[in-house]
Length: 518
Image (tube, rainbow, N blue to C red; front, side, top):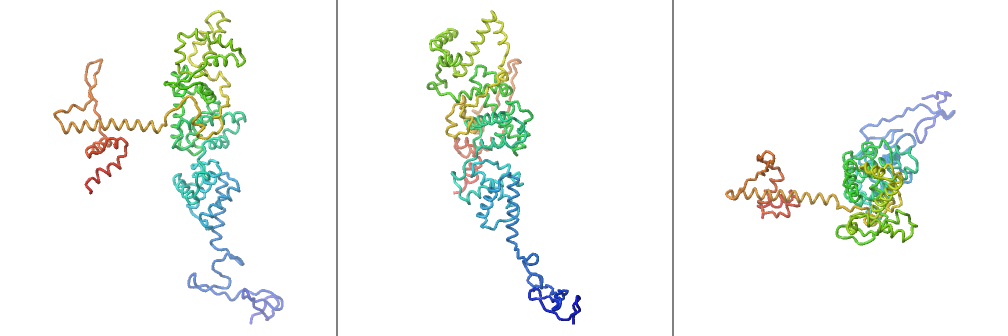
């Protein structure tokens, strides 16, 4: 008979819950002596203090609750790393609960789902967050995240009003605001860079430089250009691309395309022929000033066949002399300006804008004043010795009053005139590719004709005369895989118009490999 270790009594009572004995006299709980071992695996009998699916004494916390708890903690962690608000985290949790029917999940796929829902939530609120940033945060591939985003959009049945297009202007503003390198700049400088960047981004949209392309490289290119124009040092393409998780080579390509577009826009200026990609940064303030004024001005007449716009010389003179000048004075100055020109009709046909003529006439007035004050041509010669116009001499080249400095709709952007209206780069490349394929088709037809009619064939070598020595050199064309495919398609009676499109795999499957099938 057991004895109580506290009072040596032998009267005990059994506990109804645990089954342990306690002293009826003093209430002391006796040592456990009725342990039943669990045997036979998980499905075996249950011991006194051992219960399946429990954690600790008095708890009943199952696997499903543990999974949901850990999943919500992971969502909070991802949203914190993405700098999203707690309300945004609750929105993401509700979205994931709807998609998974309240089961949430765990594993690598669940991290990708969290990133996709975060991207969709920001996109629904018209706040741009690049896919590359989300993918870098959760540690997955851009394409994997993109596929998950498409699945989320399809499941939630989000259409265009609820799922707006990606806003590259908001992305530029967000990058400019969040980058620590620009944190030390003054408020006026940052606001100036913001308006200039928005202006150039919407010009790039009008020039189709962003059509069908990733927005991050163009944002990097414009951010670097705006920083150089405002004298902000230490902003390179490599650093900016690393900050926004963009590809450096693609950013360099977009930067060069932007400079080439500015070179084309500068051709309307009197010194436009001297502007190249290498020195366009020196002329960029003048070019952007011209583009800004061009976007603010209204057309003064219908465009002729050469693309010129009718210009009233009285407006040019009034702008140079002051808006409050007398009409008779302006008319007299117009007559002087026509007399200076050798041919007034030729001036009407020049491809110069209203702003360019105003600039030229202002320069003419300054030279005349310096000529009168000096009594000779010394000051004029001094100006002629300067080959280029230095934009740094003009501190206020940016006005910031154009509507393109604010976010506009695509329709309004396309209606604006900034002095350049090029064709889309993809369309131009397509025309060049079709021309190249046409040349290959003609060469392939000549080779086929030479083999089929050897008596009438000419040599396929291109002979060129060396003018200095009088010798003849042969230049041989090396055939590649594209030439062989074109020859094969021509021999199978494929239309040349179809070959020009470049769908070689489809044409081979349709006309070559399946040609014997009925």
